[in-house]
Length: 96
Image (cartoon, rainbow, N blue to C red):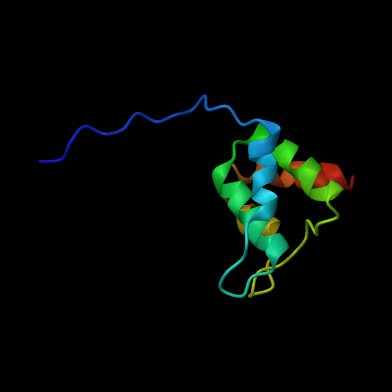
């Protein structure tokens, strides 16, 4: 018999240090460091936190259009995700 499920945490606090910590993630599997960091941030952050992350990412002179091993940017991958357009809009706001 399975135990009680864990409650979903949706109001978790993401301070700047936690958001910036994603910049230090190391890639594996051949992806570029910049793509890997963007993907992990996309998967782990809410839209508002990801927006702050992008500010730090750009300030660190990282490549927002980095590609995976198949030549795809994060934005190409997520454009058809349920909430992916919100993230693509954040990227587009960087270079209107």
